[in-house]
Image (cartoon, rainbow, N blue to C red; front, top):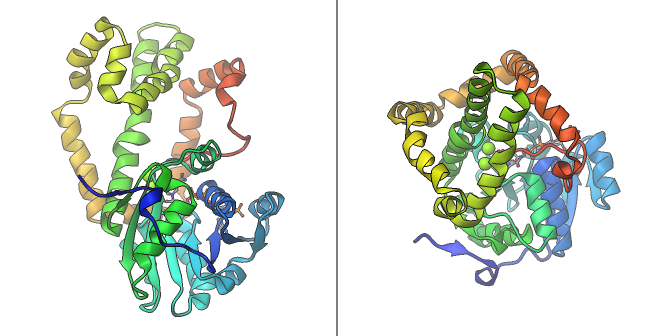
Length: 339
Ligand code: NDP
Ligand code: MG
Ligand code: MG
């Protein structure tokens, strides 16, 4: 089995190093606060606005991206992927002097050639395999979200130790840290979110909901059946795998799982998953997404509007307003993103 690093395996430290967390969104707030709580010297680099105010309110040292990059030894870039290149060129690169570390939580921009780091800095990634808000929430409860790390460029000879110490600092080594490459992290992360976690899942849920509603069943019931209950099933899989989940459901449900599941996701579905993976590997997906952003997201915005108006969302909003406990633990206005 591949080597999985836990707290006791990690001896490197970030002592004496200043860490700039660039961006204070989903991942940024979690990395900054967790690192501070594990005794590290953190500065948040951000533009004036909502995130700036929030970071200050949370008791963190705050500076502009340029200032934070100048004073830091380790610069962690936690801006949205599609914005990183512009901010990097204008504010980070000029401050990226020899011997510093440039760090990412996703390999996208380096792998797809949008950011080309200078040759005299360490470059690595530490990518938690979970939404930023859970990186913080699990840390606070004494647990952690597993992470991947990858070294792209090791000038100091210390890049692996630094990456592992960083992963430990955000609490990920409580759950397990695995080594990968920028290529593998980027391609598997994009594939996972597109085919299974986000794209595959929302399409599966919508298709199930629509099938029931179009057959004349009540939308509220279809919502509970196809969306709400999903979390309960996924929690069982998370805790105990597929067999553990199947232990808890009825034998009738398990038989239905065995005979009908492969009719929903069949060999054709898998062939299309392979096409999706090919588009990721060839850079076709990345090119489309980068162009979409250059054009101010015409297609993204149109689809987002349509999706928000889908019946399952309207019904869901009403039903969830009657179940305040569903939102317990989730701070208002925070987005939970798997990316
Ligand atoms: P977010 O979209 O949550 O980041 C938003 C933050 O970036 C805000 O603080 C925002 O500030 C700031 N920002 C945006 N534009 C600028 C700018 N021009 N100058 C300064 N600050 C700016 O990002 P994520 O946390 O989702 O993603 C960060 C990285 O982590 C990405 O590489 C992503 O792939 C990776 N990742 C994300 C995961 C997740 O859970 N979301 C999971 C694993 C990896 P403002 O309030 O001013 O707009
Ligand atoms: Mg992602
Ligand atoms: Mg991911």
